[in-house]
Amino acid sequence: MVVACLALAISLSGAAYAVSTALPRNSVGTVQLKNNAVNSAKVKNASLRAVDFAAGQIPVGPQGPAGPQGSPGASGLQLISGSGASNSSSPKSQQQDCPAGKRAIGGGGVITGSATNTFLSTSRPTDAGTGWIATGRESSAGNAGSWAVQTWVVCATVAP
Image 1 (tube, rainbow, N blue to C red):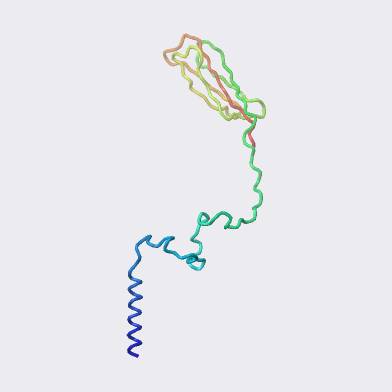
Image 2 (image 1 turned 90 degrees about the vertical axis):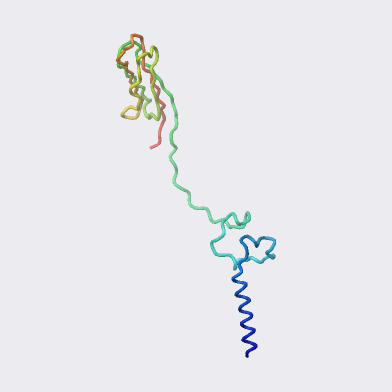
């Protein structure tokens, strides 16, 4: 009985030593592992990712139902430009409208002609959103030359 207890104590102390002596980090790799040493029972559930598997190893599930039809967005793009009267009066506004059924999706304005002491004070969509309006003004120094306001509007049929 004494011998059995002594043998048990020696074997437990060796196991305790083995457990307390940790292996260095990254010291066990592919070369140290025997073939088929790592199996499903030794891998923690939900710890692997799709990239950990070879192509074709993960079964593909059934196709889901079709989603709702998306809107077609904008179609029938059209660029329209126009210019107002060219003279030396101030202020001047120029509005360019889209054809019926189309909406303004962009636009702009510019001063043409003698642009000395003139500036564009407004460039925006119309309140209805179906055109573009731009306004030009002379500064306090005035401009004796002829100038005009030119506008561009980008129109499109827009899905509701």
